[in-house]
Length: 250
Image (cartoon, rainbow, N blue to C red; front, side, top):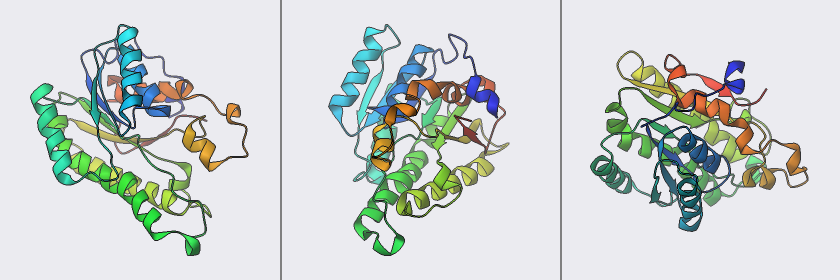
């Protein structure tokens, strides 16, 4: 799958595609929104901080890309009813979804399991796993309305091989990969939706800086540098890929 890391996307790869991105206000989500819009997509920016979403919206507008949309939502407290309301709003305004990037997540605390805070554990599971399940469940009908839809989850190295002190985050990423694989198997050969995951690797983001405070942040690539893999998974050139994990870096 290394070809995805060096993918050169056609200029209009995502022309007329409608793509929702969670955690779109900063970091990888912001870069994905800008990159998808640059390649022709109408992006729906989902996040909890309206000011950050508005800043990304303005960047997209000023660049002359297709007009985006903002959908503020705090995944920590959202209920199934909130996601059904989202479905109804998007159905009315767009009629379908061609892509959904599950990018939002929280780190939680990095402690031994014996010292993990129960409330923080539950918050991490709520945002990183339960919210993904409810959002996906609510929006599947809109993805099914597309001629070819891409559903992308975000993986992590610690979600493929457990590592000490990564507690709730690592476990949540194992669960995310389970959700991706189950969905991919369920939808294979019966749907126009392909389901895959991407492991961004070490990237210069707020979450990475929180996880590794002693690390020199600029030693890691900026989010923009890993966008080829995201474009590959969201575009038509990955139409036959299903149930796979793509590494955005070597």
